[in-house]
Image (tube, rainbow over all chains, first blue to last red; front, side):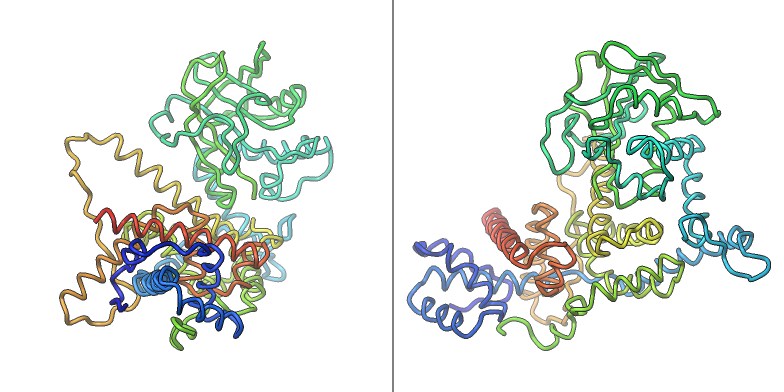
Length: 305
Length: 212
């Protein structure tokens, strides 16, 4: 049976009577096809192929697939890295003035920040966050102070990425999301995942969800942190500031908390996502909602690092 | 070895056993602001990033843009990257998130456009394959393009965690040891997952063929 590189031999495989032990042989066929089989396995495979039309066809299928994958894989343009580096160097130049201001006048070295990272990179990170909205920065700063509260109620904070990556609560569980809602973002959300449908798991929604609503305009905000007590949530939220420097208004209701304004949460999303690309922060549509919920909801989900 | 040629082996830059250590050194240097170190990382992984993006979104131009965006996100995120995770693991997470963002935005755009203004079926150009050997036979060229389209469709239909395994092993030629190290799991786990991924891919390829 001969095939050109582009012909898929699957058709031949379909026509052949199935080998009763194909599931056992198949992993060995891959090893054989990749040249990874030892001598004993090679001899066994060759012996089996001599008498099994199905596995012979499967081997052809595997060979074709591996060959097709390699031969049809697209190549990036040659100047791709050059383009990326050009953009980075432009950014570097734009940040040059800021970095220069951070140079130690005596030694000429870049002053380290409190985490030991050269200040220039930290300055750029903060600049990116400020590139969104000032309110976003306020919220990020709020989160910086949030986790130490969650963890122990005291102690020095590590870098923001450490904090966001390890939003661990008192009971040792991981915080797995910050829910955010708003009519303005309704059209911006398309993915249909229910509340609590955390990426990679199927935990049901709202049993340990803390609900926060904005009474002024009816647009809901949900802050969902597993294991977070109501008292602690209120303590944390009361520490957050709006873009104007005013504290968020937090009022406890029968089924959650009313918080305003919503704008601080909305504007945080892009800045958080840009600052922490590895955390998988997403906005998704909520399919299910608590009884008190009166509008479509979305949340920013922070997946475990 | 039946399928990997000597050239393939020479191209296997990602299969070096010291990839993780080499990455760690480059990452440390790049995180401190060394653009040359980051350029080395970029050159090393640009093909994996580009192909991951291409097979996620199915469009070469979008994949090229996404590759740039992903690499910029990596650069910006390096100061917050913690050394207790492997760079490749972190990179694949950024690839996944960036592509997912793109697909969400694209779906949103499509939803807001008037259906009447849309063509029945979007024409997606097939990019040049990795081995652009000049083909004089038009039939061979056609077959190759058809195969590329089928592979693209089949991979695009795969779950991301399976697709990245196929790309690492069968396209980039990374060793099982390197993949296991990158993903932080045992070699046996990589093999069993890859086996499932390949079985699924073969099934998708068969479906694509059946649909033709």
